[in-house]
Length: 189
Ligand SMILES: [Fe+2]
Image (cartoon, rainbow, N blue to C red):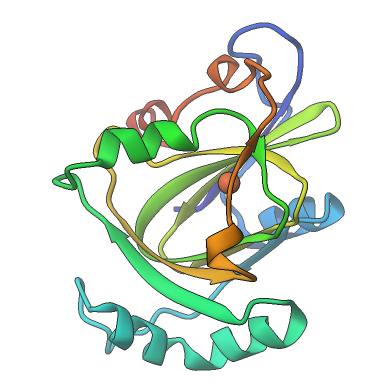
């Protein structure tokens, strides 16, 4: 289930959250106050698990068009990550340190899950995104992402320019002060 926890940035390890909810309406409202887009899209029952990218993009064509009409996202693709992926650990580590991008990071989870961690002002927001969750992180937002030790997800990605989509690392050792995906799911969210 989608889940949001909001922590203070205290400089100590594992601070306690001052907000936690798995109510999609509350999650949307808290994130909207901080400029982050969050929506739940209706599941496509006709879409089989393990569907290929073309089928995934076709199933969500209406929502994709709506998102594209509101931002500069000419390129859309669908990717799948599995626990057997040979580069899973390298791919995981790549985005596990705090970074920014010069364009929005916009994702929709078709299957599985991933943990978005957003460092906004003196707070860290951890958004556990699961199937049917759409999230839009504006350009310049400090964040990190954890797909876990055994990554399993299919996600639609919206790009301005996929060739230019690179991470600028902040060099701040903040990510390790907060829980990772596996800790959150082991403890029931
Ligand atoms: Fe990122």
